[in-house]
Figure 1 (tube, chains in turn orange, cyan):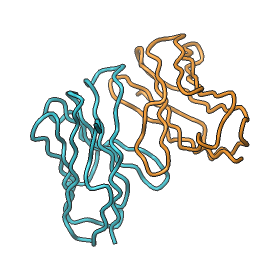
Figure 2 (cartoon, chains in turn purple, brown; figure 1 turned 135 degrees about the horizontal axis):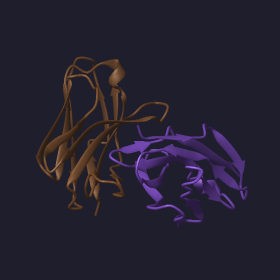
Figure 3 (spheres, chains in turn yellow, red; figure 1 turned 60 degrees about the vertical axis):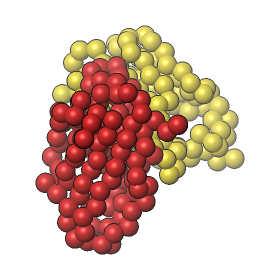
Figure 4 (tube, helix red, strand yellow; figure 1 turned 180 degrees about the horizontal axis):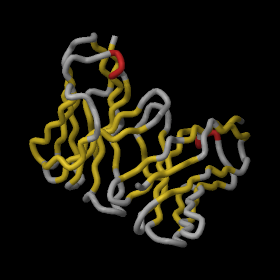
Length: 109
Length: 114
């Protein structure tokens, strides 16, 4: 069946460091891929999405590219800020919606 | 305007009690969901309704019963609460049930059973 695997956390970075959170997927057919962010005490918000191979989703300096050949959708940001501290979820939409286990990111000044 | 709203946000109750969480969406979506998030942030889908019809009913205790009076509302009733029910419960909605539709989440209901 469909599934999503993302790198385990927690991840701790200094401000302005480069961020990568890995996400790989298994799916039949052609799913859409998402990254959601959950700030402390809040619900999940859509960060970015990509609906087909080679699409790049981007928002707030974050980006991820839908790579069919490597079945990946890694999240990247060139320079993180303290305000990016949150839990990040990779997700897949096929016949159902599947979420990864979440990666906690803490950015320290 | 809040797109997906759920009440209450915080709920502290004793074991054995019955409680309900209400959810409403004003996005005009056809599909609504209940998710449970545990202390490790793991998200588990519990139920999904499409146009008031139950389409996903994952393995959850019978003590949990969803109710959808119309496609804009999906409430969750929990009987005989147990300590292990303590979690954050998220309501969510999407335009439809098919691939590519974004899921929009409410802010969560923090349930603590003591």
